[in-house]
Image (cartoon, rainbow, N blue to C red; front, side):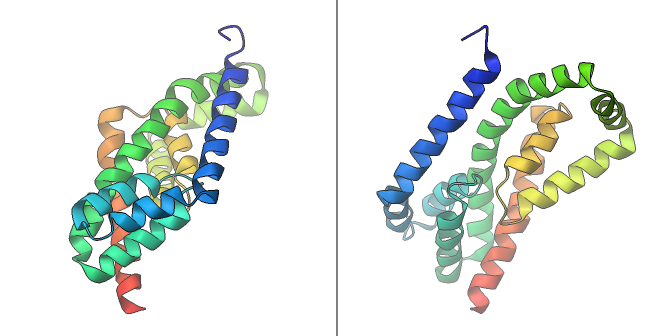
Length: 182
């Protein structure tokens, strides 16, 4: 597999999709999130981990909304954002270290990719990338796109983790506010 790293990455993604489908179809994820709902801190943390992935966002939103309705919105957002940062970090490590290598390899061979690569090195573009990625991370949309942007720009882990916590906190806080209004 060392000879075909892109194939290895595709196999990992396909495997994760199959695992996610199995979790949803067997309702294991829903049961875990429901069981931990009574435990505000642990439930928020676990739901936060699932808040990050395209395959588990919907049940995590429901769980976080229910936890926020029954408990403190701020505590739900705090511990949910820490869990989400952990989930994001796992995705980030994969995307930054593996996927960005493949994209940078493409950038060496294509004219358009060279221009994008040059633009990313400009400081103002980098801050815009942080803002766009943070907005995606804060939204109920799956975090993979925002994390991919940060991974492509080779964002350091020490900057990524606080960004993830802050933006996930804002997103979960707004989710909790909406859940309490309903």
